[in-house]
Image 1 (cartoon, rainbow, N blue to C red):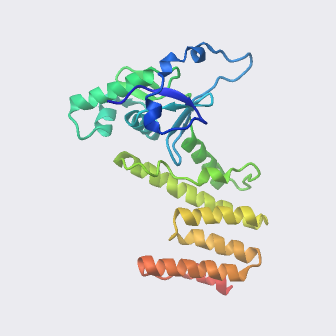
Image 2 (cartoon, helix red, strand yellow):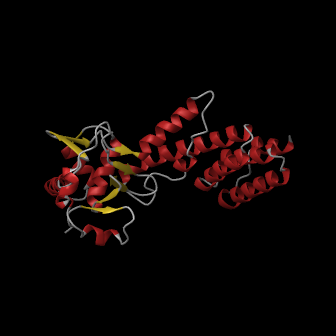
Length: 269
């Protein structure tokens, strides 16, 4: 049976199974008694779902058992109040209704042992607490602002935020559509950033964004086109041809197809 939850510093070493056996979060009385200084913003829990799952509070990682991680991630992805029965049936579909409900109660009990509020429960409904900051939400909002802007601001853009997919090593069915939606959004954003930065003459950042897009989907022609444009804008036609040949070979070997005329015409021009 999974043990209760704990907090550990970000710099702590050791695997998750050892950390789960650490001290209970309910024992951190010094944290509970801490009060923010006058005028200071209250510390908010932060949830990372890009690349991996990590819940943190006040510079410490909150260690959760896998079943509780899945509950928190599911509530985050759905992003609305949901009935307990629906949540239990979705997360534990291969068990009986009674067993699924018991699993959900156990997960909620573990979360309630924390000194921070992660999930809100109102009657038969539960949801992620609004105070929790979620990286995938912030990156989605940033991407949408960039794509909708006539003159996007790239000075404070953190392209690293678009390097990772949503929980890439999880295999839950309820995650597939959300992961694909963000995957497509981040690739479009990287291509957009690549072309706009190249137009501004910031070729190093443009190449990084374009290469990240290609790494995310090696058979995506629009990503390769963006890189070809960067090489041509920088005055490197040989690099542009090399990028095109790499894409043509990948496409032929993997799908038996040939590149479209759109990318061919870039080189002819």
